[in-house]
Length: 154
Image (tube, rainbow, N blue to C red):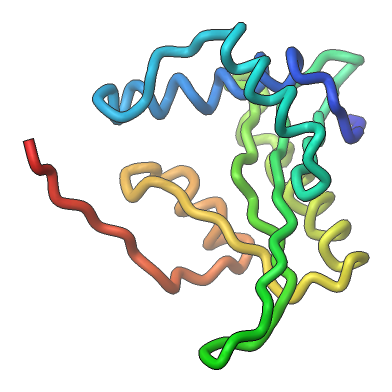
């Protein structure tokens, strides 16, 4: 297994499809069907922003998973202390490679990078119905602290 940082927007878009398709299935009125050209274009813009980083997990030179992280700077205000956090937008592993420690490998990798950058906290979110993510992140010491809700206004 090898993990490398990438700026290949097309590869990122292809890896993102795993994640995106599950969102479309869960919430088809919120998420658009996957469009590789549009996704590649969106990721091309993001790879040029220094606060976004993308990491590809490869097995035998084949991409099997990826992580998308964002470095967030919170300036001090009268309400909150300033801090630097890492926000994990996604960690996604191809189905045949799940349950084999590959998600942990990516999570440990980005955690080490966060520590090397003196990040105070790693944050992320997941859908309440994504029990696999809930179990995975709790198993790796992530603590729930906020819950988002919505009200549909047809």
